[in-house]
Length: 289
Image 1 (cartoon, helix red, strand yellow):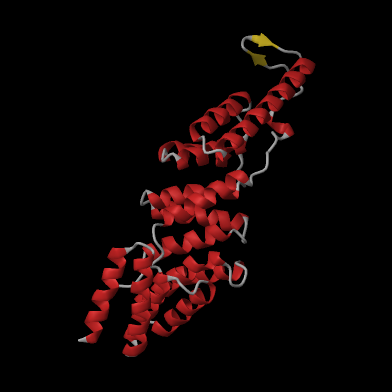
Image 2 (cartoon, helix red, strand yellow):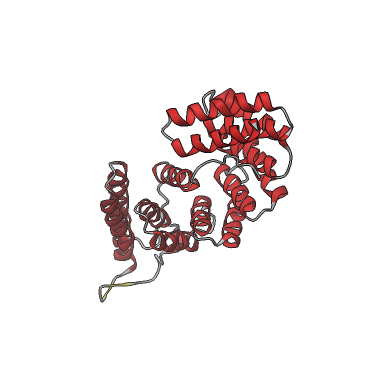
């Protein structure tokens, strides 16, 4: 079967979404039921009265928020290890602060400490079972680790919590495609596109992957439409020209195929992807014989 082009390494897209989840996150205060404010508790071996307990609890929460802010600032400056230290300080002061666990998980992920990130996302979910982005990010890690079924479960839960969660729909579709569940994957791509604004650059990888699915399932005309949708957003998208040329070749329109593939090869060369350009030229030679 002739080659065609998919969106490159999806871990890049996953990481971007994770970082946005951190920077856009809101501070989640401890719920009133999380601490017993009626009876005494013991801190460092000292039993506090209810009033003293309330004061101490408030001070700990304020301190946790300070460290949470420090962690976000460190992360924004690219100091990821410092961010982890700050989020850990917040967790030490307020262990039930779900967003601190979540943010620490994101920082671990950026540093490729995937086991630690997975543990933090799981703890986030234990503390806050409605934390949609934690399910998405944990699903991303499960998918990256080859645990497709666990990834599907997490993405599905995220969508149940928030039917407008674009990343959950998209990554669910990618995972379904990896399992060759073509109809489910197409449905996921369709839903993702429905949720995105018209002509959004974020739609490009969705169209590209749906186009590749259409090629793989023998629907070249649908693949042509997907490639055209990409080129309306980005007229110099090399993978879109690659898929377009392959689709034209499938329907026997070799002149259109060569024109699209020549554009793909030229753009791949311009972008510094010589190996992809070579693949395209091999395809041009094959259909020219």
